[in-house]
Image 1 (cartoon, rainbow, N blue to C red):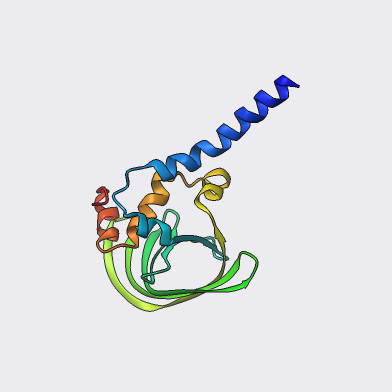
Image 2: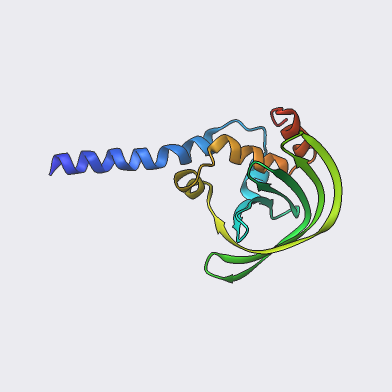
Length: 151
């Protein structure tokens, strides 16, 4: 019985460690900004970090680009399923590390996830999720381009 209890405790510590590291990071983002960030994975397999208060979001197409969105909205369609939309403003192309102005609209079906779920079940790590959250703030896409820390 004691062995089971100890192994259960170790499993809980192992599972909660990544969650604690996300919350414990000194990211430079205010607690208000961190509390307003939501993460989505679209039906196109894009990762979106969105500040639900400001309506600013960043979308990652792995290995290709990071797109800055404004007027970001999501509508719950049941469970964790949502419909996301926003206006495309800028794109950071990963291959040449250049930011370009673009315009257009984006809309897709998506699922909302917690940072801890993304850390446990995807290849996204805590520091990268923090970068994506910072991307939603003023100058965040530029800091991502320069690989600079958030203020």
